[in-house]
Length: 264
Image 1 (cartoon, one colour):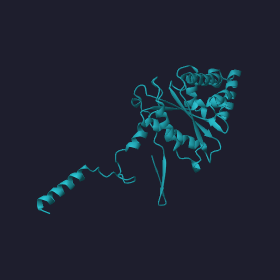
Image 2 (image 1 turned 120 degrees about the vertical axis):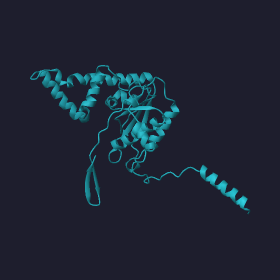
Image 3 (image 1 turned 60 degrees about the vertical axis):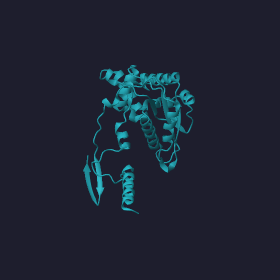
Image 4 (image 1 turned 180 degrees about the vertical axis):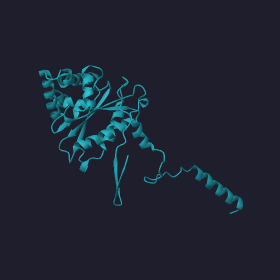
């Protein structure tokens, strides 16, 4: 081969090499301080959405979201869930009205601060509050209880006017702690929706529907399944990224080489 031909071959090789994509770092190879990758950024940018457009989400996008949910990990791969999707606006309104009615029933008797100390009304509210706390221990946190009061006052809707509601039902026969598995599948659902340009919001007060025989029948919730949460899904109205909620820096205990270290 002549020198000229050799130069042409080498030049072609260099051009092809320039066109090859740069080798991406393998998992675990990133240097400290490297920029967030695509998946990390998705988790950092996701927001709980409470304002949705009226436009309905195409059914094929919801099916994509459900498919990603189906691949969520679970203890023993028992997959203790099934999904209910509600896209009927009238039915969603009726679900909201029922949950709002329950909020109204419990908000006034639970708010003992409305009554003077030493009165029968105060004692009654405090007693009812203790009983309710045993029935729903985590609901008495100020944040969800504040939401109960706002919904009771018709200041916002339970499902935030979302056009689609995804309800992951929990199979109580699940291995270990099926509630944890339900949280994992829910994370898959909301992140899949986020990747498709959709907004979501967890709705814990939807669990009131689980206590109603009528609503269990209408939503197809049969034993051994329970309705613990629902997820509102739709197109985002406004700019949620402008309302970033700060996250706390929690204490982490780091154990390595026989040493323990705390960092935040």
